[in-house]
Image (cartoon, rainbow, N blue to C red; front, side, top):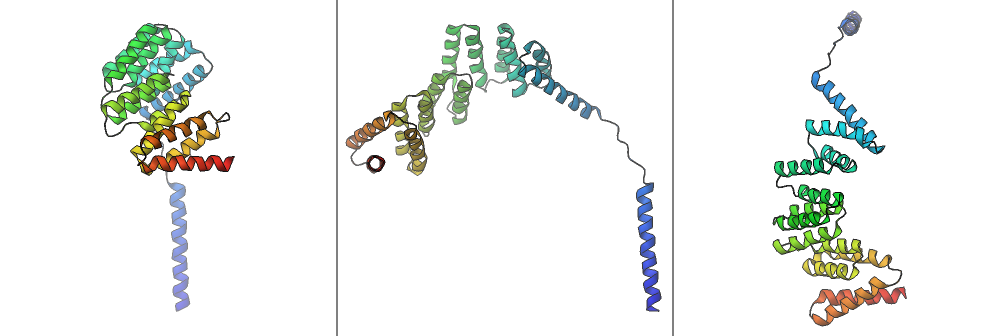
Length: 267
C-alpha cells in the first residue's frame, strides 16, 4: 500500500514537471515594439558620440552642428561647455558671447557663467573687457562658501590663477568663520609663491589645530621637492619669526623645534 502511494506521488510529480515544461514551450513570446522615448534616447546617444568624435578630431565645424542641436535639446553643463568651445575655436565670438549671456540670464546664481563671459572676451583679444568682467565677478561673490569655491574653480578652469586667489581673498573678507587659508596655500604653492604658501598654511594651523597632520603633509611634500632648499630656508625663517613674535603660542614653537630636529636628522 505504501509503495502504491509512493508510485502515485512520483507519477503526479512527473506530470507536473511535464505540464510545467509544456507551459514554457507553449507560452507565447512577448513582442515589445520600440517605444518612441527609447528610440529617441538611442539617437541622442549616437549624436553625443559622433559630436565627441568630431571634437576630438578638431573638426569643430561638424561638431558644432551637433552640439548646438544637443544644447537646444538639453542645456546641461556638458553640452554647453562643448558648444562654447566649438564657437571659440571657430572664432564665432559674437555667438559665444550671446550663449554665455543667455546662461547668465537663465542661471543668475551660477557664477561660473560670469567667469565664462570674461573668458570669451580674453579669447577674443579684448583684454580690457576681460579684466573688467573678471573684477566684476569677484565683487559679485556672495558670502556663501560654495559660491566662493565655485568662483575660484571656474577661474582655475579658465587658466586664471590670480583671479582664483582673488576669489578666496574675497571669500575670507565676507565669510568670517572660514578664512580659506588652506585653499590659498594650495594656490600659492601652484603659483610658486612659497613665502605666501607657508604663511597661509601656518595661518591655517593656528586656525584649526585638529588639521595639523594635513599641514605637515603639505609642507613635507613641498620640502621633498625643494632641491635648492628655498622652501626650507623660508619655512625656517618664518617659523622663527612667528615663535619670537608669539612666544606663548605652543603650536609655532612645536613646529619650529620639530623643523630643526628634522633638519638635523637629514643632515
